[in-house]
Length: 375
Image (cartoon, rainbow, N blue to C red; front, side, top):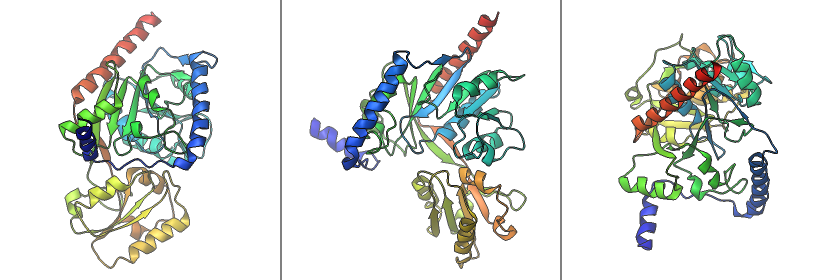
C-alpha cells in the first residue's frame, strides 16, 4: 500500500520542491523568531484589534505569487453588487508612504501595480493602501460613505488586525506541505499555521484527476471546519495597454504570431505554457516580480522587438506589468500599437457554489450583527 501511494504521488503534476539544505540552520533560527512572535499574539502581549465589520483576509504562508490579486478580484465580483466593498493592501513597491486612498487620478506609483490593477478594473471599489492595516481600516471606516465589507490583500502575517474570515492560498506548483521556512524554502510561516484559516485554496491547478484531489486533500489535512477548494487561472482575450492605439484580440488570433513576452512576475511559466498552445514563435524577457521598468528596459524591449523579422508580431505583457507600463512616457507610438496584456480570472474546479454560499453568508451575518450592534 505504501509503495502504491508513493507511485500515485509521483503522478501529481508539480515539480519537486527545491530546498536549499545548507540554509536550514538559518531557517530554524527564523522559525524560532516566527514562533515567539505568534505566541506573543496568542498570549496577548502583542494586541490584536477586532472590528465590527466583515473583514476577509486573502493571504498565504509563502513568499512569491500564489494568485492573491485574481482571487481578490473574484471576491469583488461576488460582493460588489450587494455591498460597498473596500480593498486594503500595503501597496507593494509604491512610491508613497502612509495611508493613500485611491482616486481617478491615482497611478501605480501611488498605490502599487496590483492595487492600481484592481482600481482600474473596479472603479466603484473603495481602495486604499497602508502598511499599517489597523490605521488603514480605521481611516476607511471614518469615510463619509465607508465600506460594508473590507478585503485585506496579503495580510495573513499582519496579526495586529483580527480578520473575521481568513482565506489562505497555496500554489499547486509548490505545495506548502513539501516546503520549509525561509531562507532554505519559501514559507513565511510554519505549515501548521494553515490551521488558522477558515478556507484553503490550492491555486494555479492544471487539470486534475479524482486521485489528485484525494492525495492533495490528504497531505493538506484540513480540519473539518475548514473549506478546501481548487482553482485554476483562465486567460481572457488580449487587451491593448494603450487603448487609443489598437483594439483587443482573442487568444485564437495569436495563431502563428511571433510573440515577444516581457514579464515582471514571480512565476511566468504558466503564461508561457498557455501561449505555447497557440504559437511556437515566442521570445521571452523576464524581470523580477513587481519590477519597475526603466528607460534602458524600454529600449531593450524595443530593440528585441525590432529584431523580429516577421511582420505578424506583438509584444505581450501581464496585466500587472501593464499597470506599470501605462504611466511611462518613453514608449514610442509605434511600439504602443503592438503592446498588449493578457488578463486572467479565477476559475473554481469544484465546489464553487459552496464557496460562494459561505462567503456571502459570512458577510451577510456580520453586516447584520454590526447593524444590531449600532442600534
